[in-house]
Length: 111
Length: 115
Image 1 (spheres, chains in turn cyan, blue):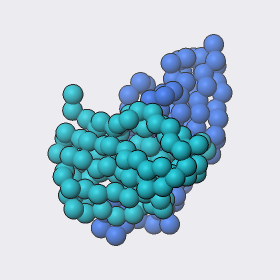
Image 2 (image 1 turned 135 degrees about the vertical axis):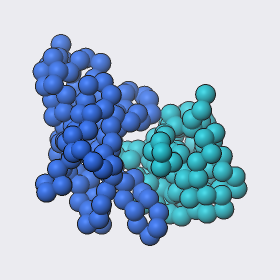
Image 3 (image 1 turned 90 degrees about the vertical axis):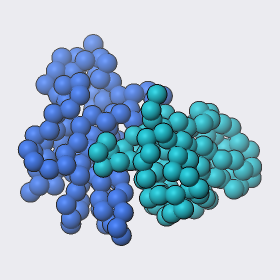
């Protein structure tokens, strides 16, 4: 099925650990982005990419790194997890014709 | 800076009653507007979008929204809700800044439909 695939669906980390949230799309979209969802705050843009090799910061980039080596993949890295990064993370892939397609999310808890 | 305000954090309503979820945006440039729905423990699903043209936009599941440029609003309506409409609803605006597009979300409105 075409769409956006996020892994893992759930993750528990200890403070200071690192991990990578994976995001892959098979729609050949140039534009991809990462959001975090927190209660009462909607979704906030972390980082985005307009094509392979090009990334930029969104509203809340601190503590996160991204890279875009291929059109299909846009991983989000937490280098040293903090409790404030406990959230639900959504990856989105975008085209002008179809708009934003969101993945099913990764629920991350940092203890 | 662009922003989206959803005026109600929670809206309780009885089944088969009408509902309106309010959304206001601030932007000095042309915008594209969206409503998304999120069912419990699921991702976001597009309900409807306004890009241009008719200000009344019809979406899935019987929802519609009206774009009002003078009031900078994009309220979502449904004439008769069902239990299955219980979900969180997000209004969003896509803006073009620095050569790239960004989707800015409101804080969400939790719709609770009671029997």
